[in-house]
Amino acid sequence: MRRFLQRVTLVTGSLVVGLALAELGLAVDGRYNSVVTRELVASPAIWEPPADETDYEAHPDLNLEVEIRLDSQGIRNHGDVSTEAKPSIIGFFGDSFTDNRRIADQFTFTTLLDGIAQSPARVVSYGVDGYGLDQSYLRYRKYEAHDIRHVVYLFCGNDLRNLYETGLVEYRDSQIVFRRPGPRFLRRLLGRVRLTYLVMGAYRRLWGTAPDVLPEAHADRDSRFKDAYAATISDDFLSTTPGPTAQLAETFVMVLRKWQEEVEGRGRTFTVLVLPRESDTALAGKLLRPFGGRVIYLREYFPDEMVVFFNDGHWNEYGNLQMASVLTALDRLPFHSEISQRALSSDLTRAINRYYEEHSPRPRRR
Image (cartoon, rainbow, N blue to C red; front, side, top):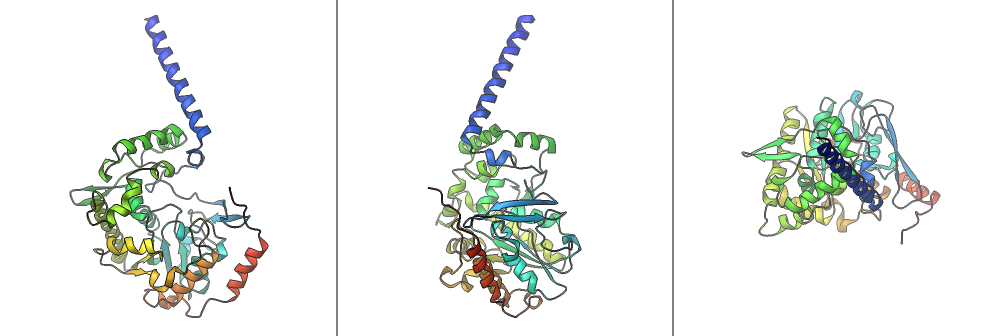
């Protein structure tokens, strides 16, 4: 018996040492370091912004840190009134193009629109960096008690891919089913271990050939986004003979319709805005064809893709000003009458010019 226990102890100790060395190796490698330092929140959308927190994000082009203030409900709120107390909300949902974490609050398109909204209407950004359709829908469900009169979903070309990567939605018997998050303690524990993401990444590389073989949803963005199949989704869908992506696209439209029906069933409006880049327009043109709801392609209003972007691919302060100007003039929007029809002040352009003059360019990595 003693010899058996010694062998068990030896094997267990060797396993622990091996795992510790593997974890140390991954820490040196660094590919998962940004993930394990992130505070994990038990959420059906995998991750979500923390409440009552001030965060900072490096500006992509200028040598400064952008302050991001989150209110008691984890929403970026530039006013003194809590989001839940705001009336007649025009709510924007989407990913980093909606969240605008790299933009000082006074220059985001949602803040600019809020500044010219006709009382009592208020404009709120519910966007979260990295979110896709499924997560945006779940975020709406979290805040549906808010007085959101108009829901605007800003479609980005990687949203179809994100639906596969998150694994939040299953397709069963022509129905969509949202997965539930795992136990909070277990998620927090595993979320701090780099080996968790290595194993999940290996699983997907071995078996991730179709959306229906995903493991349970988890909190790591980096490992999910390194999947070989995920990288081919857009091209596969736009091809003449799409493979398993065809079912993924059908699931995408079903989630979008479910969201629309819930919003309109409450007497609210639902609008999809498609980012003005050529790639977003091409994918949405085929993907959203069977949707049947209100879809507005912003490329029509940005001739020759005249949107100003950061070097990292997101729109910068000037791009946000262009976006706000387009939405102000767009009479196809159901909330057009709730936004002031006067042009945005030319002082804003001068303010952005001064902002860039006051801060030196961020040094480029070689």
